[in-house]
Image (tube, rainbow, N blue to C red; front, side):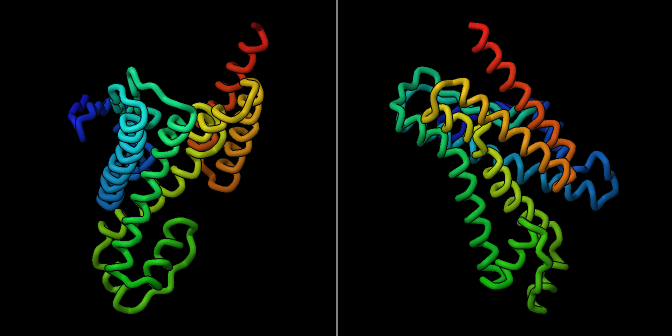
Length: 238
């Protein structure tokens, strides 16, 4: 267990967080030196990115609703609590949106650093490679720099991918993700919120399995679909 305070906010990182991120990095399945190096870089990028995401929630929540925020990084990602906070509907919306917003800003800052290093054209090519697998066409100078600094390139790729794609997935209208919580603010009744969540989660699980070939993504969103189905059924029994 790791505990510290950041900007006056208590932060706790649980052991299961490290294991989950290590599994996602693939380092445990590829124990050669290159795989371990990439795994450690991915763990660093994920930890920083998730912490920034949760700080977005916590700092905005403290600003708009008061209370006593706390951040916990655990097996399923991160949580930002705000004990005693009082929020208007608008304040709660901005608190929720500030999490993925902070991640997108962090990803944008990483891209600006890449622009400073490689120039706009090569940075855009590298970003396209990192995010959608587009084959990059680089100048000779940029290519030499990239080949000689693989750890730095791995960090750039991981930071861009995590802060963009995890941010996008987190905005899907699936409870308890941020997108699902935003949906809950504006869509009534609650049963409809769960129906939307089930449809979105099932679709994402299929896309994850078929397009991304990601068993983890399929299992995660399949579990979220089941969780929302169970919650919806409990509403029908009332």
